[in-house]
Length: 572
Image (cartoon, rainbow, N blue to C red; front, side, top):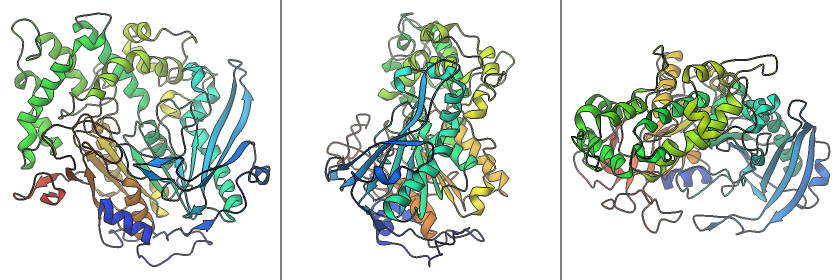
Protein backbone atom coordinates (compact mmCIF):
# COMPACT_ATOMS: atom_id res chain seq x y z
CA UNK A 1 0.00 0.00 0.00
CA UNK A 2 0.97 3.67 -0.21
CA UNK A 3 3.16 4.83 2.70
CA UNK A 4 1.54 7.32 5.08
CA UNK A 5 4.19 9.93 4.20
CA UNK A 6 3.59 9.41 0.47
CA UNK A 7 -0.04 10.31 -0.30
CA UNK A 8 -1.39 9.06 -3.61
CA UNK A 9 -1.45 11.59 -6.40
CA UNK A 10 -3.71 11.88 -9.42
CA UNK A 11 -2.50 9.84 -12.38
CA UNK A 12 -0.73 12.43 -14.50
CA UNK A 13 2.74 12.47 -16.04
CA UNK A 14 5.51 14.48 -14.46
CA UNK A 15 7.65 16.56 -16.85
CA UNK A 16 10.50 14.06 -16.35
CA UNK A 17 8.34 11.01 -17.11
CA UNK A 18 6.68 12.71 -20.06
CA UNK A 19 10.03 13.63 -21.60
CA UNK A 20 11.25 10.06 -21.32
CA UNK A 21 8.04 8.72 -22.77
CA UNK A 22 8.07 11.06 -25.76
CA UNK A 23 11.67 10.30 -26.49
CA UNK A 24 11.69 6.51 -26.49
CA UNK A 25 8.39 4.95 -25.46
CA UNK A 26 4.89 4.36 -26.62
CA UNK A 27 2.81 4.01 -23.49
CA UNK A 28 -0.72 2.97 -22.76
CA UNK A 29 -3.24 5.33 -21.25
CA UNK A 30 -3.29 6.19 -17.58
CA UNK A 31 -4.15 3.20 -15.42
CA UNK A 32 -2.70 0.56 -17.73
CA UNK A 33 -5.49 -1.89 -16.95
CA UNK A 34 -4.31 -2.36 -13.37
CA UNK A 35 -7.83 -2.86 -12.07
CA UNK A 36 -7.92 -3.09 -8.29
CA UNK A 37 -4.16 -2.92 -7.76
CA UNK A 38 -2.92 0.10 -5.77
CA UNK A 39 -1.62 3.05 -7.79
CA UNK A 40 1.58 4.41 -6.28
CA UNK A 41 2.12 8.15 -6.43
CA UNK A 42 4.94 10.03 -8.10
CA UNK A 43 8.18 10.87 -6.33
CA UNK A 44 9.07 14.45 -5.44
CA UNK A 45 12.61 15.73 -5.25
CA UNK A 46 14.63 17.53 -2.59
CA UNK A 47 17.94 19.39 -2.46
CA UNK A 48 21.05 17.88 -0.91
CA UNK A 49 21.61 19.05 2.65
CA UNK A 50 25.13 20.27 3.45
CA UNK A 51 28.38 19.54 1.67
CA UNK A 52 29.73 16.28 0.34
CA UNK A 53 32.84 16.35 2.52
CA UNK A 54 30.94 16.76 5.77
CA UNK A 55 28.31 14.15 4.90
CA UNK A 56 30.35 11.16 6.21
CA UNK A 57 30.40 12.71 9.68
CA UNK A 58 26.61 12.74 9.69
CA UNK A 59 26.46 9.03 8.78
CA UNK A 60 28.30 7.63 11.79
CA UNK A 61 25.14 6.08 13.24
CA UNK A 62 24.55 3.72 10.31
CA UNK A 63 24.46 0.20 11.77
CA UNK A 64 27.23 -2.26 10.87
CA UNK A 65 28.66 0.33 8.49
CA UNK A 66 31.95 2.19 8.19
CA UNK A 67 31.93 5.19 5.86
CA UNK A 68 35.29 5.46 4.12
CA UNK A 69 34.90 8.60 2.04
CA UNK A 70 32.80 11.51 0.91
CA UNK A 71 33.66 13.82 -1.99
CA UNK A 72 32.20 16.10 -4.63
CA UNK A 73 32.12 14.86 -8.23
CA UNK A 74 32.13 17.86 -10.54
CA UNK A 75 29.60 18.21 -13.33
CA UNK A 76 30.86 16.56 -16.52
CA UNK A 77 33.24 14.15 -14.78
CA UNK A 78 30.89 11.40 -15.94
CA UNK A 79 29.08 11.54 -19.27
CA UNK A 80 26.36 9.50 -20.95
CA UNK A 81 26.23 9.63 -24.74
CA UNK A 82 28.01 12.97 -24.61
CA UNK A 83 25.69 14.37 -21.93
CA UNK A 84 27.45 15.63 -18.78
CA UNK A 85 26.21 14.15 -15.52
CA UNK A 86 25.48 17.00 -13.07
CA UNK A 87 27.47 17.55 -9.89
CA UNK A 88 26.85 14.96 -7.19
CA UNK A 89 28.28 13.52 -3.99
CA UNK A 90 30.16 10.24 -3.88
CA UNK A 91 29.98 8.33 -0.59
CA UNK A 92 31.94 5.09 -0.09
CA UNK A 93 31.80 2.57 2.72
CA UNK A 94 31.90 -1.00 3.98
CA UNK A 95 29.37 -3.13 5.83
CA UNK A 96 29.72 -6.23 8.02
CA UNK A 97 33.51 -6.45 7.97
CA UNK A 98 34.67 -9.88 9.16
CA UNK A 99 37.30 -12.59 8.93
CA UNK A 100 36.07 -15.97 7.73
CA UNK A 101 36.41 -18.92 10.05
CA UNK A 102 36.36 -21.20 6.98
CA UNK A 103 39.05 -19.78 4.68
CA UNK A 104 40.70 -17.15 6.91
CA UNK A 105 40.11 -14.36 4.36
CA UNK A 106 38.81 -10.86 5.15
CA UNK A 107 35.37 -9.97 3.85
CA UNK A 108 33.07 -6.95 3.75
CA UNK A 109 30.24 -5.59 1.62
CA UNK A 110 31.89 -2.60 -0.04
CA UNK A 111 29.69 0.02 -1.70
CA UNK A 112 29.48 3.44 -3.22
CA UNK A 113 26.49 5.74 -3.41
CA UNK A 114 26.11 8.72 -5.72
CA UNK A 115 23.78 11.46 -4.54
CA UNK A 116 22.67 14.19 -6.99
CA UNK A 117 22.42 17.74 -5.74
CA UNK A 118 19.18 18.00 -7.72
CA UNK A 119 17.57 14.78 -6.47
CA UNK A 120 14.34 13.49 -8.01
CA UNK A 121 13.15 11.67 -4.88
CA UNK A 122 14.04 8.20 -6.22
CA UNK A 123 16.55 5.52 -5.17
CA UNK A 124 18.08 3.04 -7.64
CA UNK A 125 19.89 -0.09 -6.44
CA UNK A 126 22.24 -1.16 -9.22
CA UNK A 127 22.68 -4.90 -9.56
CA UNK A 128 26.08 -5.68 -11.09
CA UNK A 129 27.05 -8.48 -13.45
CA UNK A 130 29.18 -11.61 -13.42
CA UNK A 131 30.13 -12.89 -9.97
CA UNK A 132 30.31 -9.30 -8.64
CA UNK A 133 33.47 -8.54 -6.63
CA UNK A 134 33.84 -4.98 -7.88
CA UNK A 135 32.06 -1.79 -6.88
CA UNK A 136 31.07 -0.64 -10.35
CA UNK A 137 30.45 3.06 -10.90
CA UNK A 138 27.01 3.73 -9.43
CA UNK A 139 25.28 5.26 -12.44
CA UNK A 140 22.27 2.95 -12.72
CA UNK A 141 23.14 2.12 -16.31
CA UNK A 142 21.68 -0.66 -18.44
CA UNK A 143 22.78 -2.52 -21.58
CA UNK A 144 22.72 -1.59 -25.23
CA UNK A 145 24.68 1.65 -25.29
CA UNK A 146 22.12 3.71 -23.35
CA UNK A 147 21.60 7.40 -23.91
CA UNK A 148 20.54 7.88 -20.29
CA UNK A 149 20.86 6.26 -16.88
CA UNK A 150 19.43 6.65 -13.40
CA UNK A 151 22.09 9.02 -12.08
CA UNK A 152 21.74 11.35 -15.07
CA UNK A 153 17.99 11.44 -14.43
CA UNK A 154 18.47 12.46 -10.78
CA UNK A 155 18.22 9.17 -8.87
CA UNK A 156 20.38 8.42 -5.84
CA UNK A 157 22.24 5.29 -6.98
CA UNK A 158 23.89 2.48 -4.99
CA UNK A 159 26.44 -0.06 -6.24
CA UNK A 160 28.24 -2.80 -4.30
CA UNK A 161 30.62 -5.74 -4.67
CA UNK A 162 28.02 -8.07 -3.04
CA UNK A 163 30.38 -8.98 -0.22
CA UNK A 164 33.67 -10.15 -1.76
CA UNK A 165 36.65 -8.93 -3.80
CA UNK A 166 37.45 -9.70 -7.43
CA UNK A 167 41.07 -10.27 -6.41
CA UNK A 168 39.92 -13.50 -4.80
CA UNK A 169 38.83 -14.86 -8.19
CA UNK A 170 36.02 -17.31 -7.54
CA UNK A 171 37.67 -18.91 -4.49
CA UNK A 172 35.65 -16.66 -2.19
CA UNK A 173 32.88 -19.24 -2.76
CA UNK A 174 34.66 -21.44 -0.23
CA UNK A 175 33.33 -19.08 2.44
CA UNK A 176 29.66 -19.96 3.09
CA UNK A 177 28.61 -16.46 4.17
CA UNK A 178 30.15 -14.93 1.04
CA UNK A 179 27.96 -17.29 -0.99
CA UNK A 180 24.84 -16.12 0.80
CA UNK A 181 25.76 -12.44 0.53
CA UNK A 182 26.34 -12.80 -3.21
CA UNK A 183 23.12 -14.71 -3.69
CA UNK A 184 20.74 -12.42 -1.82
CA UNK A 185 21.77 -11.32 1.66
CA UNK A 186 23.94 -8.35 0.61
CA UNK A 187 20.82 -6.80 -0.92
CA UNK A 188 18.93 -7.28 2.34
CA UNK A 189 21.74 -5.63 4.30
CA UNK A 190 22.45 -2.78 1.89
CA UNK A 191 18.87 -1.66 1.27
CA UNK A 192 17.97 -0.24 4.73
CA UNK A 193 21.44 1.30 5.02
CA UNK A 194 21.08 3.06 1.67
CA UNK A 195 17.62 4.39 2.51
CA UNK A 196 18.93 5.72 5.83
CA UNK A 197 21.81 7.37 4.01
CA UNK A 198 19.35 9.05 1.65
CA UNK A 199 17.29 10.21 4.64
CA UNK A 200 20.36 11.86 6.18
CA UNK A 201 21.49 13.45 2.92
CA UNK A 202 18.15 14.92 1.84
CA UNK A 203 16.09 15.15 5.02
CA UNK A 204 13.67 12.52 3.78
CA UNK A 205 13.83 8.95 2.53
CA UNK A 206 13.18 7.99 -1.09
CA UNK A 207 9.57 8.26 -2.21
CA UNK A 208 10.12 5.53 -4.77
CA UNK A 209 12.79 2.83 -4.90
CA UNK A 210 13.90 0.82 -7.93
CA UNK A 211 16.17 -2.18 -8.41
CA UNK A 212 17.74 -2.91 -11.78
CA UNK A 213 20.51 -4.61 -13.68
CA UNK A 214 21.36 -6.97 -16.52
CA UNK A 215 22.77 -10.53 -16.48
CA UNK A 216 23.60 -11.31 -12.84
CA UNK A 217 22.20 -7.84 -12.13
CA UNK A 218 18.93 -9.02 -13.68
CA UNK A 219 19.12 -12.08 -11.43
CA UNK A 220 19.59 -9.78 -8.43
CA UNK A 221 16.43 -7.90 -9.49
CA UNK A 222 14.40 -11.10 -9.87
CA UNK A 223 15.58 -12.39 -6.49
CA UNK A 224 14.87 -9.04 -4.84
CA UNK A 225 11.31 -9.03 -6.23
CA UNK A 226 10.71 -12.39 -4.56
CA UNK A 227 12.67 -11.93 -1.33
CA UNK A 228 12.27 -8.17 -0.72
CA UNK A 229 8.90 -7.29 -2.28
CA UNK A 230 8.23 -4.55 0.27
CA UNK A 231 11.51 -2.69 -0.29
CA UNK A 232 11.25 -1.65 -3.94
CA UNK A 233 8.50 -0.22 -6.12
CA UNK A 234 9.95 -1.18 -9.49
CA UNK A 235 12.17 -4.06 -10.61
CA UNK A 236 14.07 -3.87 -13.92
CA UNK A 237 15.50 -7.28 -14.90
CA UNK A 238 17.62 -7.54 -18.06
CA UNK A 239 18.70 -11.00 -19.31
CA UNK A 240 17.94 -12.35 -15.84
CA UNK A 241 20.12 -15.37 -15.07
CA UNK A 242 17.79 -16.46 -12.29
CA UNK A 243 18.79 -20.10 -12.90
CA UNK A 244 22.47 -19.18 -13.11
CA UNK A 245 23.88 -22.41 -11.59
CA UNK A 246 21.94 -24.49 -14.09
CA UNK A 247 23.00 -22.24 -16.98
CA UNK A 248 26.66 -22.57 -15.98
CA UNK A 249 26.48 -26.37 -15.82
CA UNK A 250 24.71 -26.48 -19.20
CA UNK A 251 27.47 -24.31 -20.71
CA UNK A 252 30.08 -26.72 -19.35
CA UNK A 253 28.13 -29.60 -20.92
CA UNK A 254 28.15 -27.74 -24.24
CA UNK A 255 31.92 -27.28 -24.05
CA UNK A 256 32.38 -31.00 -23.46
CA UNK A 257 30.47 -31.75 -26.67
CA UNK A 258 32.14 -29.01 -28.71
CA UNK A 259 35.67 -30.12 -27.82
CA UNK A 260 34.96 -33.42 -29.61
CA UNK A 261 34.69 -31.58 -32.96
CA UNK A 262 37.42 -28.97 -32.40
CA UNK A 263 40.13 -29.14 -35.06
CA UNK A 264 42.58 -27.88 -32.43
CA UNK A 265 41.97 -29.52 -29.04
CA UNK A 266 43.68 -26.54 -27.36
CA UNK A 267 41.26 -24.07 -28.97
CA UNK A 268 37.58 -24.70 -28.32
CA UNK A 269 36.55 -22.06 -30.88
CA UNK A 270 37.76 -24.32 -33.72
CA UNK A 271 34.72 -26.49 -33.04
CA UNK A 272 32.36 -23.91 -34.54
CA UNK A 273 34.18 -21.21 -36.49
CA UNK A 274 33.18 -17.63 -37.26
CA UNK A 275 32.18 -18.61 -40.79
CA UNK A 276 30.17 -21.59 -39.55
CA UNK A 277 28.30 -19.51 -36.98
CA UNK A 278 27.52 -16.92 -39.66
CA UNK A 279 26.27 -19.75 -41.86
CA UNK A 280 23.84 -20.86 -39.15
CA UNK A 281 22.51 -17.32 -38.76
CA UNK A 282 22.04 -16.91 -42.51
CA UNK A 283 20.15 -20.18 -42.74
CA UNK A 284 17.90 -19.21 -39.84
CA UNK A 285 17.12 -15.93 -41.59
CA UNK A 286 16.41 -17.72 -44.87
CA UNK A 287 13.80 -19.87 -43.14
CA UNK A 288 12.39 -17.42 -40.58
CA UNK A 289 12.96 -13.77 -41.55
CA UNK A 290 9.71 -13.35 -43.50
CA UNK A 291 7.49 -15.02 -40.88
CA UNK A 292 6.62 -11.60 -39.41
CA UNK A 293 5.71 -10.13 -42.81
CA UNK A 294 9.00 -8.32 -43.47
CA UNK A 295 12.32 -9.55 -44.85
CA UNK A 296 14.52 -7.21 -42.85
CA UNK A 297 17.26 -9.25 -41.15
CA UNK A 298 15.28 -9.75 -37.93
CA UNK A 299 13.31 -12.76 -36.71
CA UNK A 300 10.40 -11.31 -34.78
CA UNK A 301 8.22 -14.43 -34.65
CA UNK A 302 10.59 -16.51 -32.53
CA UNK A 303 8.05 -19.21 -31.76
CA UNK A 304 7.17 -19.82 -35.40
CA UNK A 305 10.87 -19.93 -36.27
CA UNK A 306 11.59 -22.78 -33.87
CA UNK A 307 8.86 -24.80 -35.52
CA UNK A 308 10.05 -23.96 -39.02
CA UNK A 309 13.84 -24.32 -38.71
CA UNK A 310 15.83 -27.54 -38.53
CA UNK A 311 19.61 -27.57 -38.20
CA UNK A 312 19.60 -31.07 -39.65
CA UNK A 313 17.72 -30.11 -42.81
CA UNK A 314 18.28 -26.37 -43.31
CA UNK A 315 22.06 -26.27 -42.90
CA UNK A 316 24.09 -28.16 -45.51
CA UNK A 317 25.94 -31.22 -44.22
CA UNK A 318 29.57 -31.39 -45.29
CA UNK A 319 30.40 -34.19 -47.71
CA UNK A 320 34.08 -33.38 -47.48
CA UNK A 321 36.30 -30.96 -45.56
CA UNK A 322 34.80 -28.16 -43.46
CA UNK A 323 35.09 -24.86 -45.35
CA UNK A 324 32.47 -22.62 -43.71
CA UNK A 325 29.73 -23.50 -46.21
CA UNK A 326 28.46 -26.53 -44.29
CA UNK A 327 28.51 -28.29 -40.93
CA UNK A 328 29.75 -31.83 -40.51
CA UNK A 329 27.40 -34.47 -39.20
CA UNK A 330 29.51 -34.65 -36.04
CA UNK A 331 29.24 -30.87 -35.60
CA UNK A 332 25.47 -30.99 -35.88
CA UNK A 333 25.37 -33.71 -33.23
CA UNK A 334 27.55 -31.59 -30.92
CA UNK A 335 25.82 -28.25 -31.56
CA UNK A 336 22.14 -29.20 -31.70
CA UNK A 337 21.80 -29.87 -27.92
CA UNK A 338 22.76 -26.24 -27.25
CA UNK A 339 19.40 -25.36 -28.76
CA UNK A 340 17.23 -28.27 -27.65
CA UNK A 341 18.78 -28.16 -24.16
CA UNK A 342 21.56 -30.25 -22.60
CA UNK A 343 20.40 -33.42 -20.84
CA UNK A 344 21.69 -35.58 -18.01
CA UNK A 345 22.29 -39.26 -18.60
CA UNK A 346 18.74 -39.95 -17.42
CA UNK A 347 17.22 -37.49 -19.88
CA UNK A 348 16.64 -34.63 -17.40
CA UNK A 349 17.08 -31.17 -18.90
CA UNK A 350 20.00 -29.43 -17.24
CA UNK A 351 18.85 -25.86 -17.92
CA UNK A 352 16.80 -24.73 -20.92
CA UNK A 353 16.46 -24.77 -24.69
CA UNK A 354 17.88 -21.82 -26.67
CA UNK A 355 16.10 -20.41 -29.73
CA UNK A 356 17.50 -20.32 -33.25
CA UNK A 357 17.87 -16.64 -34.16
CA UNK A 358 19.81 -14.28 -36.41
CA UNK A 359 22.59 -13.37 -33.95
CA UNK A 360 24.66 -16.56 -33.70
CA UNK A 361 27.40 -15.04 -35.86
CA UNK A 362 27.86 -11.96 -33.67
CA UNK A 363 31.27 -11.42 -32.09
CA UNK A 364 30.07 -11.73 -28.49
CA UNK A 365 28.72 -15.24 -28.98
CA UNK A 366 32.24 -16.71 -29.13
CA UNK A 367 33.05 -15.52 -25.62
CA UNK A 368 30.05 -17.24 -24.06
CA UNK A 369 30.44 -20.45 -26.08
CA UNK A 370 34.20 -20.97 -25.91
CA UNK A 371 35.79 -18.83 -23.19
CA UNK A 372 33.15 -18.71 -20.46
CA UNK A 373 32.74 -22.46 -19.85
CA UNK A 374 36.48 -22.93 -19.29
CA UNK A 375 37.43 -19.63 -17.60
CA UNK A 376 34.25 -18.46 -15.82
CA UNK A 377 31.71 -21.25 -15.40
CA UNK A 378 34.43 -23.57 -14.08
CA UNK A 379 35.12 -21.29 -11.11
CA UNK A 380 31.47 -20.33 -10.60
CA UNK A 381 30.35 -23.95 -10.44
CA UNK A 382 33.50 -25.35 -8.85
CA UNK A 383 33.81 -22.78 -6.07
CA UNK A 384 30.51 -20.95 -5.65
CA UNK A 385 27.53 -23.09 -6.68
CA UNK A 386 28.40 -26.67 -5.82
CA UNK A 387 28.62 -28.38 -2.45
CA UNK A 388 31.28 -29.16 -1.49
CA UNK A 389 33.46 -26.63 -3.37
CA UNK A 390 36.71 -27.51 -5.09
CA UNK A 391 40.05 -26.50 -3.59
CA UNK A 392 41.14 -22.90 -4.11
CA UNK A 393 43.66 -23.77 -6.86
CA UNK A 394 41.06 -25.14 -9.27
CA UNK A 395 42.24 -25.67 -12.89
CA UNK A 396 39.37 -24.22 -14.88
CA UNK A 397 39.64 -25.92 -18.29
CA UNK A 398 40.53 -29.29 -16.77
CA UNK A 399 37.63 -29.04 -14.32
CA UNK A 400 35.05 -28.18 -16.99
CA UNK A 401 36.18 -30.67 -19.62
CA UNK A 402 36.58 -33.48 -17.10
CA UNK A 403 33.50 -32.96 -14.94
CA UNK A 404 30.61 -35.40 -14.79
CA UNK A 405 27.47 -33.42 -15.64
CA UNK A 406 25.17 -35.65 -13.58
CA UNK A 407 27.40 -35.06 -10.57
CA UNK A 408 27.43 -31.28 -11.09
CA UNK A 409 23.64 -31.19 -11.32
CA UNK A 410 23.44 -33.03 -8.00
CA UNK A 411 26.09 -30.81 -6.39
CA UNK A 412 24.42 -27.47 -7.24
CA UNK A 413 21.39 -28.80 -5.37
CA UNK A 414 23.36 -30.25 -2.44
CA UNK A 415 23.97 -28.99 1.11
CA UNK A 416 26.07 -30.09 4.07
CA UNK A 417 26.79 -28.92 7.63
CA UNK A 418 28.98 -26.03 6.41
CA UNK A 419 27.04 -25.02 3.32
CA UNK A 420 23.48 -25.09 4.56
CA UNK A 421 21.94 -23.55 1.42
CA UNK A 422 22.48 -25.09 -2.00
CA UNK A 423 23.58 -23.07 -5.00
CA UNK A 424 20.09 -23.34 -6.44
CA UNK A 425 18.68 -22.07 -3.15
CA UNK A 426 20.78 -18.98 -2.52
CA UNK A 427 21.04 -17.93 -6.18
CA UNK A 428 17.41 -18.18 -7.28
CA UNK A 429 14.05 -16.67 -6.30
CA UNK A 430 12.55 -19.06 -3.72
CA UNK A 431 9.26 -19.26 -5.65
CA UNK A 432 9.75 -17.41 -8.96
CA UNK A 433 6.11 -17.29 -10.02
CA UNK A 434 4.78 -16.23 -6.61
CA UNK A 435 5.14 -12.44 -6.70
CA UNK A 436 1.85 -11.67 -4.99
CA UNK A 437 3.39 -9.55 -2.23
CA UNK A 438 5.07 -7.32 -4.82
CA UNK A 439 2.00 -7.18 -7.03
CA UNK A 440 -0.50 -6.40 -4.29
CA UNK A 441 1.34 -3.32 -3.03
CA UNK A 442 1.34 -1.77 -6.52
CA UNK A 443 4.95 -2.51 -7.47
CA UNK A 444 5.83 -3.41 -11.07
CA UNK A 445 8.41 -5.53 -12.89
CA UNK A 446 9.79 -4.98 -16.39
CA UNK A 447 11.92 -7.75 -17.91
CA UNK A 448 13.85 -7.70 -21.20
CA UNK A 449 16.00 -10.37 -22.84
CA UNK A 450 17.96 -10.74 -26.09
CA UNK A 451 16.74 -13.62 -28.25
CA UNK A 452 20.34 -14.38 -29.34
CA UNK A 453 21.69 -14.44 -25.78
CA UNK A 454 24.15 -17.34 -25.68
CA UNK A 455 24.48 -17.80 -21.90
CA UNK A 456 21.07 -17.09 -20.34
CA UNK A 457 18.23 -18.32 -22.52
CA UNK A 458 15.26 -16.18 -23.47
CA UNK A 459 13.33 -19.48 -23.53
CA UNK A 460 13.95 -19.85 -19.80
CA UNK A 461 12.64 -16.34 -19.19
CA UNK A 462 9.59 -17.03 -21.37
CA UNK A 463 8.94 -20.25 -19.43
CA UNK A 464 9.10 -18.26 -16.18
CA UNK A 465 6.70 -15.64 -17.53
CA UNK A 466 4.28 -18.32 -18.75
CA UNK A 467 4.31 -19.69 -15.21
CA UNK A 468 3.72 -16.22 -13.79
CA UNK A 469 0.76 -15.77 -16.11
CA UNK A 470 -0.68 -19.12 -15.07
CA UNK A 471 -0.27 -18.22 -11.39
CA UNK A 472 -2.25 -15.02 -11.99
CA UNK A 473 -5.31 -16.30 -13.79
CA UNK A 474 -3.62 -16.37 -17.19
CA UNK A 475 -2.53 -12.71 -17.24
CA UNK A 476 0.28 -11.04 -15.30
CA UNK A 477 0.47 -7.92 -17.49
CA UNK A 478 -1.02 -5.66 -14.81
CA UNK A 479 2.19 -5.89 -12.79
CA UNK A 480 4.89 -7.65 -14.87
CA UNK A 481 5.79 -7.40 -18.55
CA UNK A 482 8.44 -9.20 -20.57
CA UNK A 483 10.04 -7.90 -23.77
CA UNK A 484 12.12 -10.01 -26.14
CA UNK A 485 14.80 -8.25 -28.22
CA UNK A 486 15.30 -10.10 -31.53
CA UNK A 487 18.93 -10.51 -32.59
CA UNK A 488 20.36 -9.10 -29.36
CA UNK A 489 23.06 -11.01 -27.54
CA UNK A 490 23.78 -10.95 -23.83
CA UNK A 491 22.48 -7.56 -22.62
CA UNK A 492 23.55 -5.77 -25.83
CA UNK A 493 25.04 -6.21 -29.29
CA UNK A 494 24.17 -8.56 -32.10
CA UNK A 495 22.25 -7.65 -35.27
CA UNK A 496 19.61 -5.88 -33.23
CA UNK A 497 17.89 -2.65 -32.28
CA UNK A 498 19.39 -2.79 -28.81
CA UNK A 499 19.20 0.83 -27.65
CA UNK A 500 16.11 1.57 -25.58
CA UNK A 501 15.09 3.06 -22.23
CA UNK A 502 13.27 0.57 -20.01
CA UNK A 503 13.84 2.63 -16.87
CA UNK A 504 11.67 5.53 -18.04
CA UNK A 505 8.98 3.02 -18.99
CA UNK A 506 9.13 1.41 -15.56
CA UNK A 507 8.93 4.73 -13.70
CA UNK A 508 5.96 5.85 -15.80
CA UNK A 509 4.21 2.57 -15.06
CA UNK A 510 4.93 2.57 -11.32
CA UNK A 511 4.18 6.21 -10.66
CA UNK A 512 1.67 7.16 -13.37
CA UNK A 513 -0.06 3.88 -14.16
CA UNK A 514 1.03 4.04 -17.81
CA UNK A 515 1.74 0.42 -18.69
CA UNK A 516 4.25 -0.01 -21.54
CA UNK A 517 2.43 -1.38 -24.57
CA UNK A 518 5.73 -1.37 -26.48
CA UNK A 519 9.25 0.03 -26.13
CA UNK A 520 10.83 1.79 -29.08
CA UNK A 521 14.34 0.46 -29.69
CA UNK A 522 16.95 1.91 -32.03
CA UNK A 523 19.96 0.53 -33.87
CA UNK A 524 23.39 1.88 -32.96
CA UNK A 525 24.93 2.63 -36.32
CA UNK A 526 27.98 4.81 -37.06
CA UNK A 527 27.75 8.14 -35.27
CA UNK A 528 25.47 6.87 -32.51
CA UNK A 529 25.71 9.22 -29.52
CA UNK A 530 26.41 6.39 -27.09
CA UNK A 531 28.47 3.91 -29.10
CA UNK A 532 28.23 2.14 -32.44
CA UNK A 533 27.28 -1.53 -32.51
CA UNK A 534 29.93 -3.41 -34.51
CA UNK A 535 27.47 -6.25 -35.17
CA UNK A 536 25.02 -4.06 -37.10
CA UNK A 537 24.45 -5.36 -40.65
CA UNK A 538 25.72 -3.08 -43.38
CA UNK A 539 22.36 -2.84 -45.11
CA UNK A 540 20.50 -1.39 -42.13
CA UNK A 541 19.85 2.29 -41.61
CA UNK A 542 22.13 3.60 -38.87
CA UNK A 543 19.09 4.72 -36.89
CA UNK A 544 16.66 1.88 -37.63
CA UNK A 545 13.89 1.58 -35.05
CA UNK A 546 11.64 -1.28 -34.03
CA UNK A 547 8.98 -1.82 -31.40
CA UNK A 548 9.84 -4.27 -28.65
CA UNK A 549 6.58 -6.02 -27.90
CA UNK A 550 5.28 -7.41 -24.61
CA UNK A 551 5.38 -11.20 -24.69
CA UNK A 552 3.68 -13.12 -26.19
CA UNK A 553 2.91 -10.52 -28.89
CA UNK A 554 5.22 -10.12 -31.89
CA UNK A 555 6.21 -7.08 -33.96
CA UNK A 556 4.62 -7.65 -37.37
CA UNK A 557 4.95 -5.54 -40.49
CA UNK A 558 1.83 -3.54 -41.32
CA UNK A 559 2.25 -4.22 -45.04
CA UNK A 560 3.42 -0.73 -45.97
CA UNK A 561 5.90 1.87 -44.80
CA UNK A 562 9.64 1.97 -44.34
CA UNK A 563 11.35 -1.15 -43.03
CA UNK A 564 13.61 1.16 -41.04
CA UNK A 565 10.77 2.72 -39.04
CA UNK A 566 9.04 1.31 -35.96
CA UNK A 567 5.81 2.98 -37.08
CA UNK A 568 5.56 0.38 -39.86
CA UNK A 569 5.19 -2.44 -37.31
CA UNK A 570 2.49 -3.37 -34.81
CA UNK A 571 2.56 -5.62 -31.77
CA UNK A 572 0.11 -8.45 -32.31
